[in-house]
Length: 202
Image 1: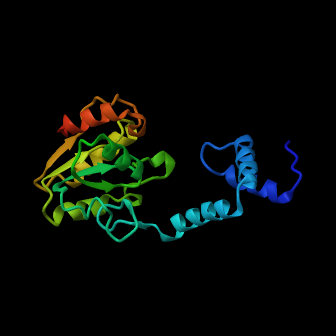
Image 2: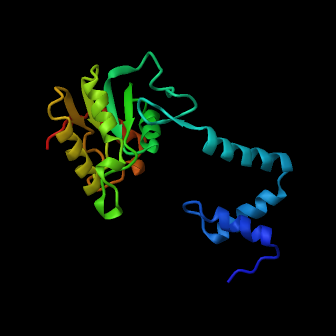
Image 3: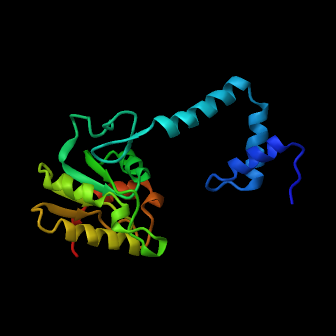
C-alpha cells in the first residue's frame, strides 16, 4: 500500500485516479508534476476544468457540446441540413469531422441501447431524433453506430421508429469491421465508410 508524505498529496492522487485510464502511479506522477508548475499555470488548469463542467452547453438541435445554445456545426450555413448523421457520442462527431468527408449535420444519442448495462431507449436522445425528423427538412438519416450487438440493436430500434417518416435511411459502409467500436477506426477507413454509405436494411 502506497504511503504519502502529505494528506493533500494523497487526496490529489485519489481525485486524479478517478479519471479513466489513470492508475495510482500515473496519478501520483501527475500530482507531482502539478506541484512543480507555477501557481498561475495550475490555477488556469483548474479554471479550465471548472469552466468546462459549469459553462459547457448541449446543442438544442443535435445534443453535441457547445459554448452556446446551438453548436458551431448546426449554425454553419454551409452545411447540408437535410442529411443527419446519428452517432453514439460526441467523440464520434469529432472523428467524422476529422475525416473531412461529411458536410451534413449530426444527432448525438448519448450512447447505445444496452439493457445489461441498464441503458434503455428512454435514456438516449432517440425521441428527440424522431421529433427532429418529423418536423421536416430531413431527407436522409445516416446511422453511424458501432458494429457491435448494442450498436446494431440501437440502429434497428431507430429504423423502426422512423419507418413511416418517408426518408432515406442509410448506414456507414462496413469498412468498419463488424464488432468494432467506431472510435477505434482510423480516419481513412471511417471517411470511406461515410462516403460509401449504403441503404439501411433491417
